[in-house]
Image (cartoon, rainbow over all chains, first blue to last red; front, side, top):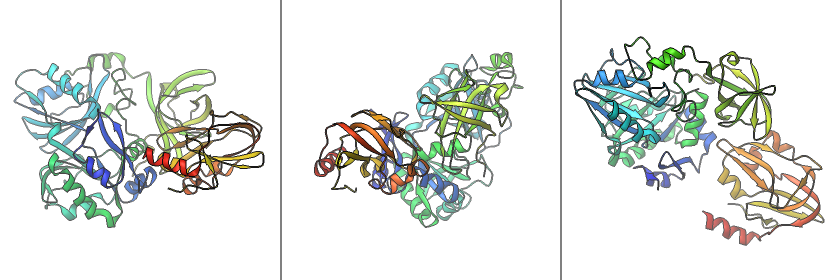
Length: 361
Length: 125
C-alpha cells in the first residue's frame, strides 16, 4: 500500500498520472504536458515538483557535529548557520547507505534530508551509530516539500515571498522564510541542474502553497512536473541517483563523489576500506549512444566480446535530443572518446564515453 | 480520445484495418496517450513473419519500453520507415502512423469493434 503525499488531491486536480514510487504514489507526468514538455519547461522557464516523499531527520544535541562528522563522509566543521552541504553516508565496507543534504540550524542542531525509499534505513543507521549527547528524530511526516526549478524559478518565488526569504548563494537556506504567507524553509538546492529553490513547509499547508506557486508562475511558463522529468533532468545534469549510480555495495568514490568525501578527517564510517582501496578500479562515466537505440538502466556493456561493465541509468536526453547513459566501467575505459557497445535487449548498440555532466547551465 | 471507426482493435491496444488479404497495423490513440512522448520505435524488417499475439515491434517513451503485439499472423510486406526517424508522429496521429503492412495472413486474433474498444478504454481509465 503506497502512501499519499499531502499534495495527492492536487495532482489529480492538475491531471497527474499517478504511479507508485519509493513507497508513495506520485505523478510520473501530467496529462496536459508530458515528460519532454515538463523537462524543457525546467530548462527554459520553470517547473514545480512535489518531493514531499523525501525524508527529514533532525539531529540535535551538544555532540551533533561530532556525530555527523563520524556518520557522514563530508566535513561539517566549518559551516555557517543556514548553510547546506551534500554528503554520502557510508557503511563499514565503504558502500553507500544513502546520499543526503545537511542544513545547519545552529551549532547543536542540524536538519537532514534523505531519499524517500531509504528513510527508515537511514534513521535506523543514524540511531544505531550515534554516540554521546545527541538525538535523531524522524520528522518526515510533518513536512511537505515542493521544488521549484528553472531559470525563472527564483523570480517567481520572489513575487510571493517575504523579503529575504531566498538565500543569495547556492546551497544555503532560510529557516525563517515565508512564501505565500506560509512560514517555511527555502533552500537554494535542487536536482535538475538548473537554478531554483526547494521549499520545506508544514504538510497541511502544502495544497495552498502549490496553488500559490502555480498562480505566481503560470504566465512565466511554469508548469507542474512529475517524476519522469525529475529523472531525465537529473540524468542530463549527470547527478547520481541512489540505487542506480550507488548502493550498499558501491562506494561514493566509485560514483565520482570525491568532492563530498573528506579523507583528511580523523575518522568516519567507511574511511578505512575507502583508503585501502585507493583510487577505485571501477568508475562512473557518461555515455552518448551513437547507434540506433536507447540504453536503459542495468544493461551490459561490451568491448568486443568482453563484458566490461553495465549502465546504471539511461534515457533519451530531451535537451540534446540524443540518448545518454551513465555506466560503471573499469578505469582504463573512462577517457572521453572511448567506444563500447551496450546490450539493449539483445541488440548491441554503439556508445561513446563523453564528459559528465552532459548538461551544464 | 480518438477512436477510428474504420478499424478493429486488439485488447492490447493495437488497431488493424484490412484491405483484401493485407492488414495495416498501428497502436491506438489511447495507447499513445498512456505511453507518453515516444522517442524510439523498433520495427521488424520486410519479409519477417509476425505471429498473432506475439511482439513484432517495441516503442520507447522517455521512461519505458513497451512491446507491440501483432493482431494477425502473416508476413511483413512493408514497414513505415518514417516512424524510425520521427516516432513523435505516433503521438500526433496514432491512426495515421501505421507500423507495418502484413500480407499472406494465416490467422487473426480476437478483434473487437470500435464501440467495444471504447468501452474497454473507459474501463481502464
